[in-house]
Every structure is written in C-alpha cells, then in structure tokens.
Image (tube, rainbow, N blue to C red):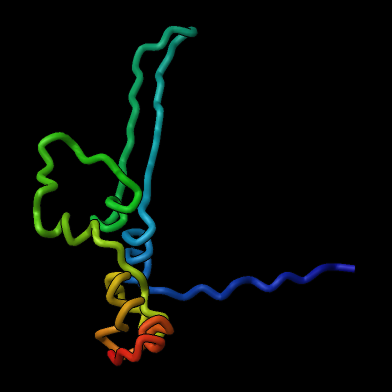
Length: 118
C-alpha cells in the first residue's frame, strides 16, 4: 500500500523571502582548506550574517569595529516589539500589551481590563 503525502503549498514573492530573512536572520559559516599530500597550503574561514537591526539586537550579533551603535535607529531597534495579532504590524511590546495597536485599533486583554481604548 503506497502512502501519499501532501506537499505544503508555498507561494511567496521576493519581498516575503527578504522579510523572512531580515526577521529571522541568516548566518553562513564556511571553512575552506586547500591541502596537497596532507600539507595545508591555504585556509579560509568565512562568517557572514544578514539580519535587520532589530534581529541583530535581539540575538546580540557583533558588528565590525568602527560601527556606530549610538544612532537613533540602533536605540529604536533595541526596544522590544511584538506583532499585532489582528493586523500583523510590529508595535512596541509595552504599547501593544498596555494600550493596543495604533494601526488597527486592536485592544489587548490587559488594556480592556484597565478600561483603555486604542
């Protein structure tokens, strides 16, 4: 008896792929060695990371020396953000849970208990 497996349906655009990579981050590690008769002639180690500032701040990725991390964008990236369950936009966690979503008007249970409207 043959088993049939359903293949997952995946459709996405380049924008979806880039958004997923920047949101989750991508790290590539490679060690390349060239040797002849057991003697290593050349060794190259490569590490590349691709991520948004927010993802880099969340996971503590190190930046090359000389990178200015005292910018407003870096300070903004370090503020924890959550995704609104209704519209999917990223909002600061304190605002989303304490008040609600400023984009669509979704109100969290905590804000409803306090009687706050978005």
